[in-house]
Amino acid sequence: MKSTAKHLLDLIVRSVERVHERYVLLKLTSNEALPLMCPGQFVEVRVDGSPSTFLRRPISIHFIDAEQNELWLLVAVVGDGTRRMAELKAGDRLNCMLPLGRGFSQPVAERRFLLVGGGVGVAPLLFQGAQLSQTDGIEVTFLLGARTSGDLLQLDEFRKYGRVLVTTEDGSAGQQGFVTNHTVLQDEHFDMIQCCGPTPMMKAVVRYASLHDVPCQVSLENLMACGLGACLCCVEKIRHRGADGAETINNVCVCKEGPVFNKEELLWQS
Image (tube, rainbow, N blue to C red):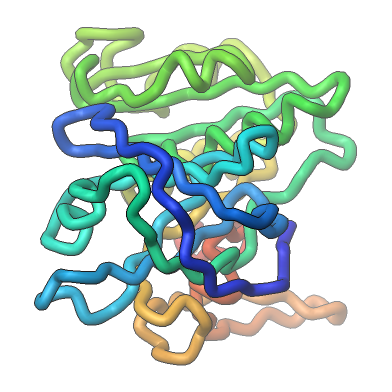
């Protein structure tokens, strides 16, 4: 699913919430109605006042609160650019190019969705879960993984839109191990798996989905600069099968053709 119209907006910071020692939640608004955005898309943020940050920073759309006319961004504070974003105050302005990329598909015949996330990769899943929950008959299960219980993010928000299952590597919350170790994967069947997180986690999820013949989409987190497919820094090799069955391998820009891809397009299964 994709919203194709792109906008360059000076959004107003409504609040900055420290949800973890390494993460902040930015809630942004506008004097005008926010444009249509879809789960899995992202924004490119201009960071002002940071002499070491020359390029915009790609941030997943975490949630859209249409009632409050708010865009939520869950930001991992990892460098000077994101640290500057974490220091923003209510009333400040943040220049954003949005929405960008191809997002998650929405239900056609699928009824049971499993949304799998780890680390800051949980960000796009909240919006997707909220969107799915608006369709009658859809069951949403979130499977969220972290190193420890203290690294689990916004569980109460996720619980508003579906069942929440967790794994932690140290066993301090939920089941111990990685997300692919959770017993729900052996005990239940899902019609679609959608995931975002560290690449090893996503590869493991794709292997599980392939083994059990479950449709699966992943949101890649390749390094992005322009967000428009011009700079070519986020290129990924993708498999394409034509109508005649012939298979080709193409280089595509994740920021433009993704970031969401079906598992059949990925070379991870090779």
